[in-house]
Image 1 (spheres, rainbow, N blue to C red):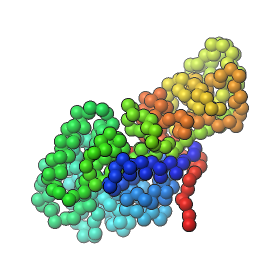
Image 2 (cartoon, rainbow, N blue to C red):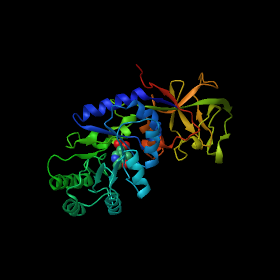
Image 3 (tube, helix red, strand yellow):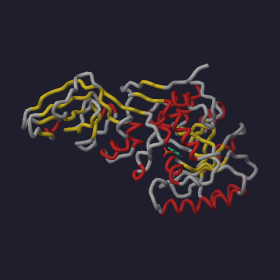
Image 4 (cartoon, protein in one colour):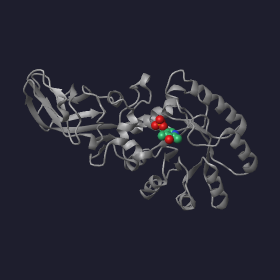
Length: 353
Ligand SMILES: *Cc1c(COP(=O)(O)O)cnc(C)c1O
């Protein structure tokens, strides 16, 4: 698998051009969606902040020398985590009462984002709870207010309308001059006028679109290209089957290639037969079941494929959005699901001097 860090940097530029004047909190949780959080963070030092899910992810980044602000999107769970967050100077999201209580017990300098639930229904204080908090806690300085959108990627979403209404209420409640931090990739692309000081892109930094109806997007460059070698080219006689369950049966004498990537590498087992694989410059169809270590594809007559040739499972030349659709999933799961045994080769590392 190759990871093109220049593409990630280019995509950050695209975020900046779509959200001019906004600060960018680059989301690099889940090992930067499988791209390698440390490598991505070292490349994106121009980001105004990074965001991760868990404190363990943030500690690894600091230990690797990342000096940018790092925000813990899930906040801290207990005193130990809060202490660690202070030591490492992490920004913490406060989404629940128990976290407010933890903070009140601890006097160290705090960098807090207040998370407000405007309709995602997952984490965050309700607008009513926020009202109470503002009265009791008005003196506490916070970095700003964060909320998450549940349906920014769908056209004409009633849920999005509801959230936008509540975001207006939130704006009035906190008053002018406060930082809002709202837009994920879908909102940056579909609601560029959403007024907030910060944006919080993840997926688009890696060059994929979160939206089925707007995918792929030509101004985004795929950073991850998942490749694997052909390890055998075989002839299958008419009537013979290939793979577990004998699901695919040759209608005529057929040449196939066996590729060394399977579900234990993160290639989805649920993907439908016929899914495209890029091989020798052409798209060839997946045949039979995905195995743990291998997949098989049907080759065209007169092909020149030989063992050692590399197939692209998704990435440059084969949009991940299309492959995800064949597996009835989204690019997020494919990217974050590539397993540790797949070697990563980085291109466009950090420039020096
Ligand atoms: C993952 C995440 C994001 C980034 O979402 P994308 O769709 O990848 O842009 C933003 N905010 C929160 C709270 C998240 O968990």
